[in-house]
Length: 304
Image (cartoon, rainbow, N blue to C red; front, side, top):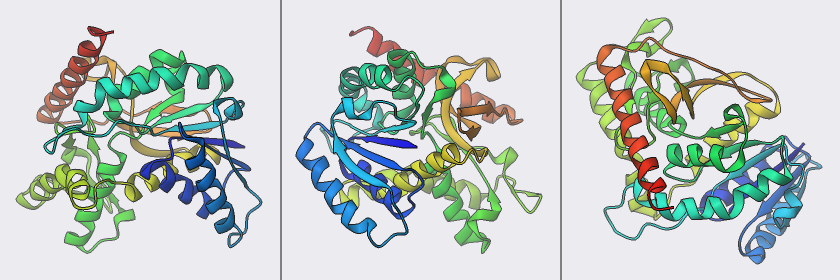
């Protein structure tokens, strides 16, 4: 199986390292605007792979070298230009990067599953569907998967229950308007009901990405392993359920926009999108997320 990562910045390099630590494909290709950076990463990771039980090849290449990829992860992004930045501020700049890369990537790998990491990820996932012409099931945004992981981590520490045993989702947009789906959160069959504790931990979750960024200048480890969780489910056709950004199909009256819902991920990409029974308040929040993301999509359409 052939796996290509586009963009060897902090996030792309962390994903490549995670893929080297858990070598589940036969070929790993690293693509970057600066080929020298990709070559350096490929050399370093090849050396590291000697210590793994692996015969996976790791190579740097051009977009043409990605031909025939089974999975493509897309990470490039412009940098924030102000201290109080929001993910939506990156939309126009990152659309240009997508337009530069995605049509040719899709042409060379017409059967690939594309995983979008670039922010604002819901808007970029929608744009990726448009630019590639891929079926929506084969374009997956990392969405609120990393937010849900952060939320579960906080709940685990508070409740003294292993995070693997906690079923709690952050849904909607990967941004400031995301929401905790309290109505479907549970552990051991016991539901979590909204409380001051769950609300407090959710408020912390919303800001955690910015908190990490402000302290170290970027986020990479959490999103890298979240991305590899998606890749793992694709490669092994595991059919794991996880909250990822997908094209919404009319759920709660929302359509023609990408947002995070629990989705089943297998070899062909999204094999099923689940529609959890949200409360009325949560349904309103989901629709508010849709309106916000649609507003950014429409804004970009107006400046093409």
